[in-house]
Length: 276
Ligand SMILES: [Zn+2]
Image (tube, rainbow, N blue to C red; front, side, top):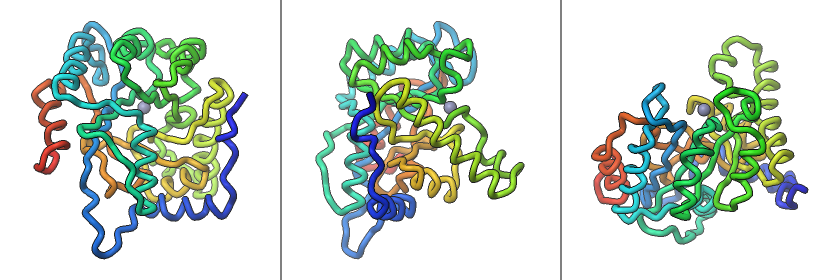
């Protein structure tokens, strides 16, 4: 059963949301700067005992990274908490965010997220958001099965959100298609992914991660019109209320990001210095 929260917002509300979200933050005169707080949103992909590709983080290194978050007194919050804070901010409201807040995400549904990442986060009680493209699930050799994803999603600290249906390079596809054909294609990627995840997992899907972190203004508008509340890219910057909600940056964490570099990014987010 899908939850009632899935019911589409009335048109008027949706249009207002589309405008206020897709067009970026509304910053009036005299309002405080939107650069604080800076929240590092970390994006992981896969884990293994040795580096197998550019996205793999060695398990021992991952454990050290989690230990670093703990030793720096980071407070790992659900991505939905940050989004709620961001949406409130767009309306001029201020929800509380804990100090030294960090968000964990993982893309692409690699099996090692089930086998390696999830148990280590579970034992710490830390939430995580998985951005999934459904065509890979129970299909690609490296990917989780629907049963595994369902098992993870049964824990309310694990949120499963959309990464389009089959992870296309959207900007390249745009070049190869007529504008009308591309709009249909992108619309299908956005809605089929969400609908499949909601049907399979019975939980609402409102967030999107762009494949390869790539998007543009037209795609941002289309995602907002499709009913998403926010979308995430990459960019190795910490997220602030100054970031348009449909291109929120995340720090890509790969094995070559050593502990000193990760600590520097976190401290830059929490401190007074601008992020490196
Ligand atoms: Zn991806």
